[in-house]
Length: 158
Image (tube, rainbow, N blue to C red; front, side, top):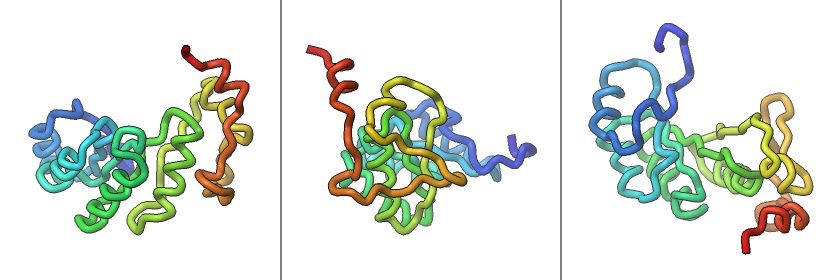
């Protein structure tokens, strides 16, 4: 994959294959990213300290919310590891990730899915848009978003 000059390879191994990540990171020049399936700070530390991955990708919804993901981000910064949050599902998660990266010193990138799904497209009253490859951090109170109550009602499970 190195010949294609990718910025990084994301999640090339199963999440619990720490030995594989350690061997892969030592064997290639290509940056390796991992962590979107992790949920505890111990696993993030292991990926950074023992596996020597180059980019850590916590998913805020699994990593202990904004507080847990911020902890991972600060630890990553101390270890000189980039943080690129995993933000694939909804605009709510995307808003949280935007606030997270705005509050951390070691990141300016995040995932932004271009896949079209009804929950991703319709859940927010004002969906996020890419403008020149960038997404603005919301400035309204809270996460800075408004959830569409009709969409919430449509997907509610009772």
